[in-house]
Length: 482
Image (cartoon, rainbow, N blue to C red):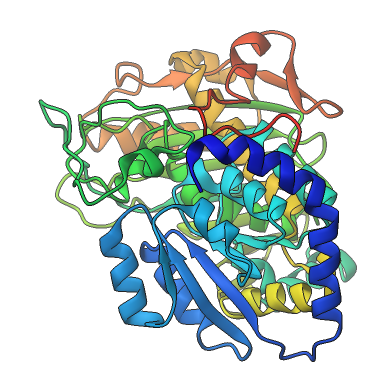
């Protein structure tokens, strides 16, 4: 499909959306539980390869098409997983393919929502990787599209499909085994290397269709060393570690501590910076945030730096390096991917939980919902994925709107977990010979969110709300009317 025809495509699919949805429903309703679902993959990088490996092992799932702006990735996907799969450079041509029932979107973050919306307008169901959105507004538009076209849209926080999660919620909330939950902490500590800093802009391989790779993002020079993957650390295309891994651990928090009762926090206050490396990245490699939920206070600590120069491991922190802690009247609960532990007030282990990552189960859950034409079956429906992504988007906004860090200003929040986190970050930076007051960190104002409009209000809101919707590069524009 030519770029110039995108507007006509959107209009025609909007008119035909109900009919397409109906025809898909009829086709599925006559099938058996193992009816073949023909999948198109949008994005053929590392995470997509993991998905292809998983879906290829599920009965009734067929990898029918693969798409990527990088022809080399298409070739590799076909060779590794499905030699018979059609190859597309332009996702719009894949979406025109009537033989594709559903798409798996594992492209860069800035493409997630637009690709999902176009797919649903074209009558496809969608499995979209986390984070759902690159900005809050486009996530809202994706929900509207899913509801308008009656599409199944699963977000890839796969731990939602781990049976362990139901056991945890029963333990914490039904049995009240540790009493009332008083506060919570979330961690994401994982070492990453510098992405380098070139003196001249990076030259993109001519075999990559750079216009299609950019899509909704702005055409700006890149000064990192590698083209692929390190887009995560550029706000033009990625969401930093907060959107990359933070969304997983914050989703666990929302699921197990709040049982999804808190869509977004009422207030947010955070600091961070990109320190030590002096590379081309924009997103923070140390990030610490307080979330006022109106009930249980929450903090998150994040770092990509090692414990000290020359060290290969992350600093030691309370609880799992990637996970969460619920501090309760009768002890504490520590959860992470695949396992969890409960401790009494004296620190004695009283119960262990064993699970898995949710991989395969999450993909099976999606396929079952597709066949049944029932989005309510999904373990991470688009609304749930949007809410968990929202915490990450707000955390990034707090960083982006922050002013010069002052430790005295952190005292605006008097929550023990927050105070402890700030002290930890000070020690962490000191190990790298950095003074927290002079380390070029930022600290936001206390930002307030209106629960009805889900927009910032009050002091600092004008600057913060500018980040709720990005500027799109035509013709790759998330539509106002889906």
